[in-house]
Structures are given as C-alpha cells and as structure tokens.
Amino acid sequence: MAHIETPPGHVAEAHFDTKPIWRTFWILLGITMVELLLATIHLKTGFPPKYVLNGVYLILTCAKAFYIIAEFMHLRHEIKNMIMTIAVPALLFVWFIIAFLWDGNSYRELRNRYDRHHAEQNLIKAPPREEPAAKKPGQPD
Image 1 (cartoon, one colour):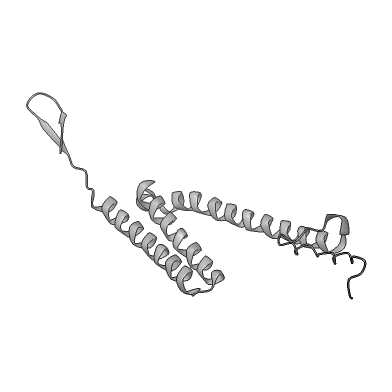
Image 2 (cartoon, rainbow, N blue to C red):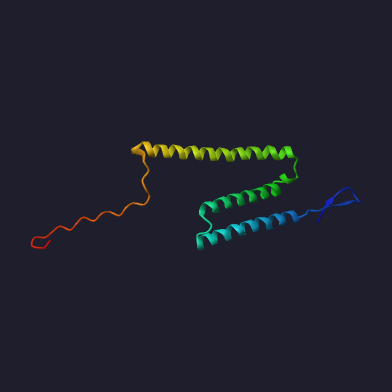
C-alpha cells in the first residue's frame, strides 16, 4: 500500500490488485508449456503432423496475444467501441499479410512454370556423376 499525501490530517491509501496480472501470467505460462510439450512430442514421435501443429500454434499464439492485450493494454476494461477500434484494423492487417503472401506465392509458381530463365533451383543437388576411369593399354575390358 502506498500513502498519498492529502490535506493535513487526511491519509489516502492506494490499493493495487496484482491478482489479474498473476492470473494472466499463469495462463500464458500454461499455454507456453502446452506449446513446448507439443513440440517435444512432435520431435520424438513425428505426431501430430507439422501442418496440424502449425495450426495449433497459430491458435495458441492468438490466445496469448489476446490475454496480453486484454490485461496489459487494459482493453478488457474498455468500452466495446474502443475495443472494436483496435481489433478490426488488427484483423484487417492479418488479412492483408495473408493476401500478399498468397499473391506472392501465386506469382512465384506461375513464374517458375512458364519462365525457364527464372526457375528456382532445387536446394538438394544430385551428387556429381563419376566419369569412368580411362583404360590403360593392356588392361582387360
């Protein structure tokens, strides 16, 4: 508790509740532990498949972002219009990123299919072929 100076003879006390912050900490820690557990299981067994794991990571990351924004940016306690003023542009920004990645991938695929001069090379190259050893005179075939 902090003592705040007021007019003579009066003392005001300010109370700071840390319970919401600790609750958010434990929620974020739990989500992070689930992510680490899933990654460990995937590395050991290969299950779940990587595309499923990426989807789960995306959902868990959005959950963590929600709790961080709600608690530490105090949006949980704001009026609905203020929340929508921040949330809608953020969702549009996510859509913007997805749309540009999709369009860029489409351009790359079309370029690789129809322009042989810009085709991307495979990262894994075949080992060089060994030339047959030259025959020395007098050796059998």
